[in-house]
Amino acid sequence: MENYHSHKHFLPFLCFFLLLLTGQQGVEASDHNHNVNVDGDDRDNDLVYSFYPKKLFVFGDSYSDTGNSDKSKPYKCWKYPYGITFPGKPTGRFSDGRIFTDYLAKFVGVKSPLPYQKWREMGGKGALEYGMNFAYGGTGVFETLLGGPNLTTQIDLFQKLIKQSVITTTDLHSSLALITITGNDYSTFQAKNVSSQDYPSFITAMVDQTCLNLKHIRELGVKIIAVANFPPLGCLPRLTTMTSFQHCSETLNELVNFHNNLLQQAVAKLNNEAEDSSPFLILDFYASFMSIFEKKGDPQGGIEFENLLKPCCVGTSSEYSCGSVDQSGLSKYTICDDPKSAFFWDNLHLTQQGWRAVYSALQPTLYQLFESNGVYLSS
Ligand SMILES: *[C@@H]1O[C@H](CO)[C@@H](O)[C@H](O)[C@H]1NC(C)=O
Ligand SMILES: *[C@@H]1O[C@H](CO)[C@@H](O)[C@H](O)[C@H]1NC(C)=O
Image (tube, rainbow, N blue to C red; front, side, top):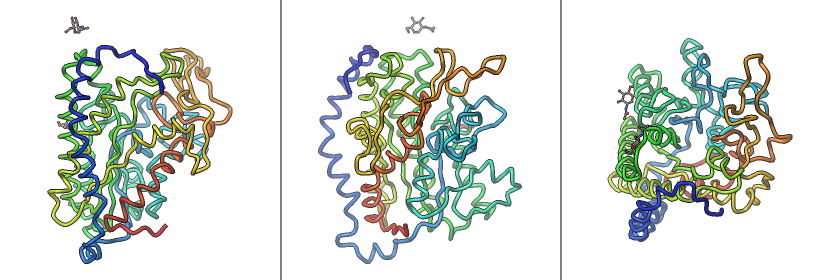
C-alpha cells in the first residue's frame, strides 16, 4: 500500500511509537515462541487439558455480531441489501453473507451459535447447543457513539446465564471464546476533538481494559480465549474514500500496529500468569488483511479480488451509505455486480468472500494455535 498523508498530525508521536516498537521486537518474538511451544515436553499436561470444543461463546462488535443489534434502531444490517448472498435476507450480520464467527464456528466443528437476542426472543427456549453470541455491532471496550452493550456488559450477560445454570460448568470446560474489538472505541475517541498526544494513554487504557475482560472470561471457566487483534483501520473504505479507494492511511495503520504490539505483550503476560496452560490466543486480523491486500486475495484458498479497497455497496453521495433510502423510498446506494469480487462490503465491513479469505489466510496459524494449546478439532 502506498503512503497516504491525510493524518499528518499523527506523525510526531508516531515517531515516538516507532522507537518503542523497535525496542520491543525481541520480547515479542520470544513470547510468541513460548505461546506455540506447549506440546514439546509437556505431553501429560497436554493430555489433561486437551479437549474437543463443543461450544463457542462470542463477544465484541459488528465483526462478530450475527444478529444482536436492535432492529428498531437504524442499524443498516437489518435492511436490504445486507444478507443478499446468505441467507438471502438481512439477519443482523453486517455483511452480504456469512462473517468471521460463522467460519470460526465451522472450523471448530460447531454451528454458528445463536445470538443472545434471538434466544431471548424465543423465550430462552432455543438451543444453546453450540454456545452463544453476545457480540453487538457498534460497541467497544468503553462506551461508544453508537451505544450498545460494551464488552464488560456482554460478559456480565454471559455470567448471569452461568449463575442461572443456563450455561453449565461442563459447557464451559469444553468451550472456546472469540472476541473481536475492532475500532468503535477509536472513532468515539476521535470524535472528542482530542490531540495526538492523547493517543498513547488512550490505547494503553484500551489494552488494559481488554485484558481485564479476557481474564474475566477465563475466570468464568472458558478454556481457550481467542482475541482478534486490530485490522488495518487505515485501509477501511471510510478512510480510503478520500483517495478514491486507492491508498491506505499508513499513519493510522502505524497507530494500530502500536496497539497490536501492546496487546500482544499484554496477552503474553496473561499467558505467563496462567499456571496450567496458555489459554489466550491472538488471531492476527492485521496480518491476514495485509496479506490479502498484497496478494490480491488468498491464492491458497483460491480467492481473488477485483476490488481490494473499494467496497461493493456504496452510497451515491457522501451523505448516504450502503442500505440508505431517501424519503420517497428510493435507494441511495449502488451494489457491485458480483459481491464475490470485492473484499469490503460497505464502508467498514467485509463481504462474505472477504471473511472467507481472512479465515483462509488465518487457517494454518489457527491449527497451530489451537493444537499446541491442547484443542483438538473434529473438522
Ligand atoms: C460498560 O457499560 C456499563 C453500563 O453502561 C458502564 O457502567 C461501564 O462503566 C462500562 N464499562 C467501561 C469499561 O466503559
Ligand atoms: C478542538 O481543540 C482545539 C485545541 O485544543 C481548540 O482550539 C478547538 O476550539 C476545539 N474545537 C472544538 C470544536 O471543540
